[in-house]
Image 1 (cartoon, rainbow, N blue to C red):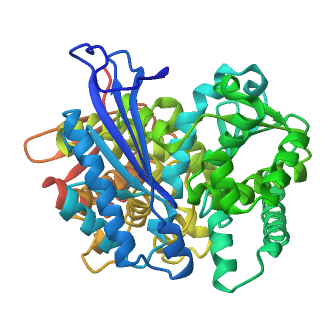
Image 2: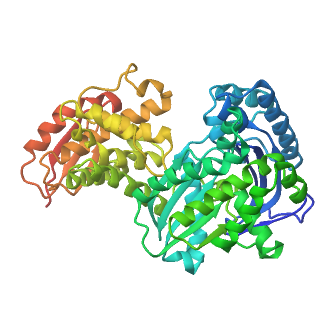
Image 3: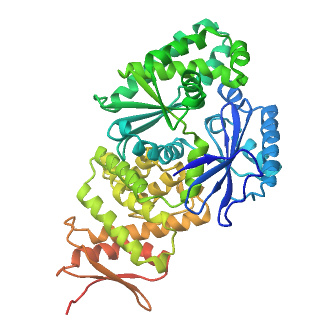
Length: 530
């Protein structure tokens, strides 16, 4: 997907079908906005980029909450952004404007106060995104780069972004996601902690190096370093270093800096005070505060993994969000494969009967497809159902008694690549209700859902119960069936199986939820082929 940038509002008129959009990132030290046009081809033409410093991280990482002054400063900045959007005639709808907030907001005790205040003052609906959603954006944004660069195409690529509040790691080999994680290792988080306890600034580097080493030990345990490892560094701090070391004309989609050269530049940055960095390089104060610690983190991790160079990408969160808006909300086939792979890894970890789980998932998918007119769920629900089917028995690892409740706990407390906390909860609840009682308002997790999600969970659970019944023998013998809605019942006609007594008994036991949800009983019968 190509991306170009314009410089002013009065650029040549766009085709009538082009869509004007904007993304706003409420970050640790600043609020940034990108305004763009999405062309009918899917290409993105950036019209303008804006950034204003706001010290959210200073509040959250020291006090644990956002002060009234900081909240009002956010409102002031966002009001100015709203006026800019009005000049572009961009409506404040989810289809045209997306506003996200990361760790400095998500970790604040009073984050809802900020979100509500912003909405009442500007009309912006802020999404507080979690680590899984951030990793999804990283994956979608970085994949085209990995495919285009020969040096990265066949390598194990470590995608690393050191932020003010955390460090995000995404490990890819080709199209496969090997590992993702968010570490509580942030340049601004550490600096603010030191200042709060009046630690000498001279100790910053030694303390940071100690924290980095602990993070490195965790990383080494999670993936095989091997010999074909390449690091791609993301983030404004390392992009600034690339610009200084390679020159303004050296900025491309992917720049490469030797580790020794980056280390020498980092040493220079540590020798300069924040005031000197601001005046020498015309940096914002917030950028000057994070620069040296962030660069040191990249250097130490690269050296600790035995690398001698670092690749620097122009990728940023706003570019990834624009890409998501361009491709639409529907998950691509390739991205869906990564989510399923993550679920299979979790199933394997908990010693699930994978033949049964995979077959039930396939049966669930086919039932979902044939029942579309009856359940009328959105396409994303098909994946939620499939994942729940793969994982419905993970709770057996804990105990086979009430294992459906253990499955809820295991899934809801596990990381599934690409799924935010809401989607993970939906998967966990559908798995929880694949047997025994019906969903009840007092049940943990289920009670927190809105009406649409409660109905969706009940429908998916009812479908999963039928799919699970179709493999009651655990022999995977039922592969083909045709569903039919009759006047007073829903019939699943099975072919190529002579004796369905075991499956029919299971449907009889698990069918009441289906009738409760869809208003008709379900009947399993042998399909006679003439």
